[in-house]
Length: 85
Image (cartoon, rainbow, N blue to C red; front, side, top):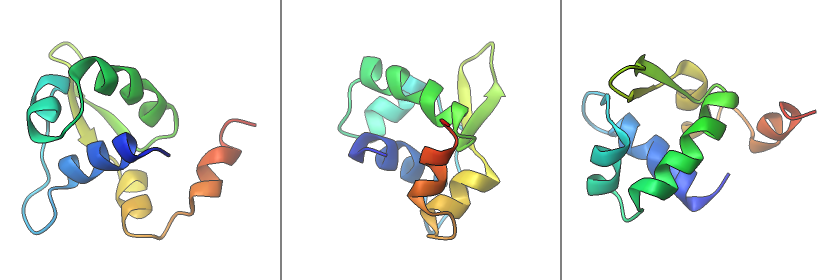
């Protein structure tokens, strides 16, 4: 997990308010990361089950239960590394 991954998940989580469904472009606007960087990281976050498509055709992403669990500290990062084995 990288700082960009954390920022993407945190932005989708939208702490203190309703969770968001966002495109890579809106994630770029709401974080300090480039859209191309975000687009490079989203497939890995999907592989680990942390985000999923809300609407694939429109490239809209949402947080999953697993993503929420990781943000809340209920899913250790090493459990994500085990996904790659």
